Length: 160
Image (cartoon, rainbow, N blue to C red; front, side, top):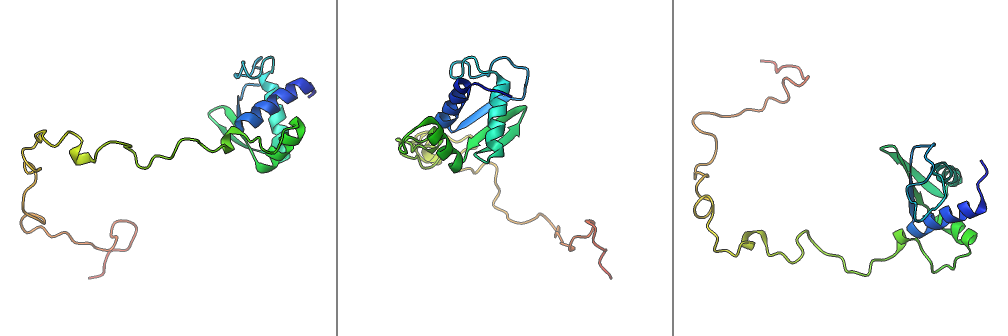
């Protein structure tokens, strides 16, 4: 399939900037879903260009839910830098360091779970979780569970 250099350059530029590119598995789609970044590029052209890069091991390919996903490899980054005449300082968005610090934990600035409501809120169960738990431990009455070593799960019954 012949693809113009202008189209090839637009697809490679989009792939290099983002570090990842996707395409729906619809070979008859007239326009790629990324209309603003890839104007006038058909979905088939994107698929075939990236299949070519995949055969050269410049991208990794994944397929899920009728969509192809391609991720740049290190060799692919070097190839596209050379093709697009980019300096070594320019990296794809997937390799850029985030400027915001990492947040530890799930809650961020939330207080610990017990103090979340200010501590003066009454409990649903009355007091210190004492409405539904009893002080007894263990099984009631004479019930004593016994482990028989997997009987009933394909093992032979114990010999008596």
